[in-house]
Length: 615
Image (cartoon, rainbow, N blue to C red; front, side, top):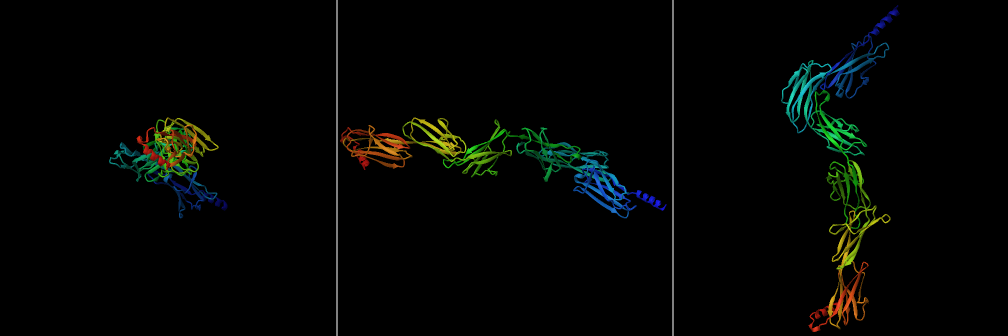
């Protein structure tokens, strides 16, 4: 009987389990800094259940732990066996709508039941109008609205709004309005609502901001592109959303973040390889305030339009050479298909960014031609090239290679002709050491382009050479003529060297000593041979009656002479010279004077001239 009695007492005591009391929380959304949930375990000393073996808070089946915005704590009153468990939600964990958490406690004693209970968070919305406007504009006929809302709304025992210069109007115990009037700068409003002796406040602002996004965005199909939307001068919390005119475009976005006071940025990322048509529009929409607590909010929308190039063509240019007058080379990057002028970035072969340096690099972005949608950007380089060199032009982050090819030498011929005769010559120009075929052009010394009489000599892969021949036909030549042969930036001069041959025409007395002479002038190349011949074409050599000789007059002129003893007849001898393998000639004349010595006024001069020649 005693044992049975003890068992009954024990069962009754075990049935007296601890009591779990939990308190629901009511907050005003958007104004409360946190939400506190609390559960109390009572009667843990009757009998001696003691501290539970474990406790846990749950939300939607997931355990809630100590984190940055959730704080768990425990306190106790040992004398009465009470334990209090608290969960504080802060930051973004503060509920914006009604929520239910669950608390669970358990003991190791198999006869003890778990203690569980739900804890609700009741959210009352104190909502306020939020406005955003563009800087430089004027806002009129708008108003701030404050309204208490929720699934089971309570009333404000009192409501007030302050801000601006207008008067607050109470619509009812949950709704009030404050006109803004006319505004060109930020206007701040504050709405206060007293609920159960607790005053809750929500603030808003008419926020004048600047929203910017590029009007056009160049898309690199190989690398994609990032588009940034920036809001500046913000005095409220800004959210940014994106949308596209094409539902098939794949892209990702980042939420608006603020790393600098008053500045919010959001990025839209189009990945590499994404198919985006030219003309696709992306919209950046900036909104002020916390949208869930706004009675009404507006947005500012800015758009950017995708622009894509059709083609990019780079040049292959020939660099300066050891011969000729080339001192610089220009490479180009031709962009076709864009809707406007773009910035072409130039880099060297190592990928280092090139900037304008007057002593080495000159960048010309060129101009945009709307009819052909073309832009040509050039890079001029002043340096010596010993091997082929690449330069990189980047268009919307896509790299393209422009090449400078080196030329070993550029050689042009000099052709000699005689003054006063017709010209029928061929000038040749040869580029040696070419890595690939190039273009050879001809110009006059004035710079005028020559377009006729040109015969191309094809590129020879064995000798790495290429040539061009210019045929010239003119009726007379009186002065040297230069033609410019150009391959890339290298220039060589081909010269028509006009020499002047002048034969003497003198009179002497019969049986006197006479002289023939021939002046060769305007020569740039010394004659390889000189000779005389008589009327019958027989060569004249020095003998008993003829003395041949020459005299250098200056660096461009030579005089040939033939001194003759005892002149008996008129003489028409031909003087000849050979220059660069070509023979030139003229006639020198000696005539017998028919007048007597006493009546010839020029005899004394001729005798002096003859003496001078013989000496």
